[in-house]
Each structure stands twice: as structure tokens, then as C-alpha cells.
Length: 234
Length: 200
Image 1: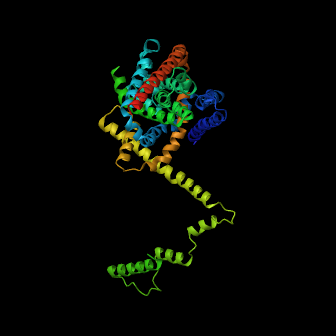
Image 2 (image 1 turned 180 degrees about the horizontal axis):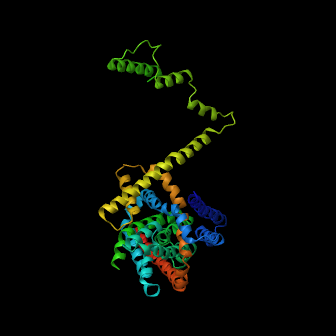
Image 3 (image 1 turned 135 degrees about the horizontal axis):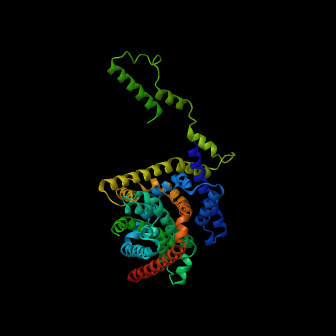
């Protein structure tokens, strides 16, 4: 009973923190106030104040993490709705996505000598939507299940940095470097900064949002098939 | 078919059923016990104020109840939440299970949820499942999707040892790698999509 209560309590606190910050974000519309960043910090602060361990919180918020699985399958709906757009540009979109995955994997593997190969390998799917990325490192590290928690945390840091920076800095950097096409901006944010970047792209324009959804979904699909094999080979 | 006809056919069915069983019914109709179905029909005939009439009362313009549009919107919302969402969610979960089974069966090192996504797309393509059936559940899940990342981010922040060892390397290099990826994908997509526009 106590376990059920704490599970409901911490899951509820997490959702309340997120939706509370989302209201503030929508009212003030400043990218630095993105709800993911501040809701995460609010939960960390609450855990510190309540002297509640992070490991216990992770177990208690397991239902939320479990929901990431159905959320990946739910992406079938936006992909299906934009099937004509994907079919018309599939070669170009596939090229962008595959080269993007390769660039991302190569750039983080360069970190190997500094942070350790195991940690660098776990960062490879940092630009893939979280539920698929977790599946990739799980599949890519067969037989080494006890390491999964640590690798998940390293991956969590990578995803957090790429997602949050995408929401806060992404559109600005793209504008400064001469990327002005809304479709390209959407694809860049979707392929790099996953769900958070996609949400940011929808704030720019519906075209950017649609391309961000396509970029995120195609990256998840391609990376889900390619990266587990690649991680096993490395 | 009118209610009277339906009642008559029920009576006829009872007669035949009785004959088949060799029972002594149908005896006189007044002595025979009515079935639940017959009782229901009789009640409906006696009290024609059914659910539709209640709707009409609610939507009466002179009353204080909601307007017809508001009533319909309300009932649609209730239907979405209590019927469409659980059904759609069940389909999503079944797709994951199917994906996991395919993964185990074919021994693929691919996440089961991703295979589930393909199973669902295949079902849409083969018209086994209408996309509208899961639209409500999918929209709700994608709406809360960013919030579902929070436990993973909190867990990552909580790894103090990891942070203290790698903070000065990890943070700036990952930021630089991410910015490089934006610029690379952005320029590549801009170039390719612009060329496709020119081709058209």
C-alpha cells in the first residue's frame, strides 16, 4: 500500500511539475524557461529537500518510464498522417537522417579517449528519442545488464543536453548559420533534439513542426535498426 | 421492424422452442411467464420516453440545461475519454507485445516498441485497424511525452560521481557535438530540399 502511494505520489509530482512549468512557459514564452529543464530541477530540489534517494525515485516513477514504450508506437499516427509527404521525398529524407545518425555517432565516439569507450558508446544514440535510445543501448550491450543503469544515466545526460539545448539554442544557432528554410529547421531540430526539439519546431511554424516529427520518427526507426548492430561491432 | 412484430416473433420462437422440447407450453399466453426481452419491449411500448427523449429535454432552448451543441460536445468528450482512449491504448500495448514477440521470434537486436510501431503501420496499410481508433490515445500520449523523460533526466543528474568525473569534458563537448549536428543536418536538408523544389 505504501509502495503504491509513493509511486502515485512521485509520478503525480513529476507530472504536476511539468504541467505547472508548461503554464509558466506558455505565459512568458521565453525559451530559457522550458518546462523540461525547470520541472527536472524542481523534482531534483524536492528530492533533496525530502531526503529521498534518486534510485528510489527512479523505481517509483517507473510507470512514467514504461509509458515511453506505447508513446513510441503512438508515433505511427503522425507518420501515417504524413505518409504522402514522406513518400514524395523519401530518398532525400532518408539521406539526411542516415547521414545525421552517422555524424552524431562519429562525433560522440571522438569523446572515447576522454570519457571512456563504454560511456562514449552509450552516448551514440543521444539524438534518438528516449524510449528507442534506451532500447538501443540495452540491445547493444548484450550480456552486460548490470551496467545498464550507469549507461542509461550517461545516455540520459547526453539526451538531456541535446534536447534542452535544442529547445533553448537550436533555432538561434540555425538562424545564425544561414539555415532559413522552415523544413530544414524542423528536420534539424527533430533529428537532433528529439521530442523537445519537435515541440520547439511547432512553436516556430506548423511546417517546421511537421518536418521535425518526420525527422524524429525516421531517426528513431533508422537508428533502431542500425545502431544496435553498430554498437555490437565497436 | 416494429416493436409489435418483434414481440410476435419472440412469442412464435417461444412456441417453437416449447414444441421442440416437448414441453406443455405454449400454454395460454396469460399464464406463461414473460421473458426478460418481452418485458423490456412491453415497458418500452408503455413508456416511450426513452434516452432520446431525455436528450431532447436537456437540449430544450427554454430550459436551463446545456445547448444541443454543448451536450453533443460533452458526450463526444466523454466518449473519447472513456471509450476511445482505453481502446486505443489497448491497441498500442498489443502492438508492443506483438513487436516484442517478433523480436524474440526472429532474435532481432531491435527495440520491441519500434517493431510494434511497424506492426501498427502494417495494420493501417492492410486496413485491419483504422488510424482513427488510436488517434485519441496517441495524441494524449504524445502530449505528455516530454514529461515522461523527467525521471531519466533526474536519474542522470543524480549520478553525482559521473558528473564530478566528467563534467568539464562531457558538457561542452556534447553541446558542441549537438550544435555541429544541427548545422550539418540543417544545411544538408536545406540543400537537398531546395534542389527538390528546383527539380519540380
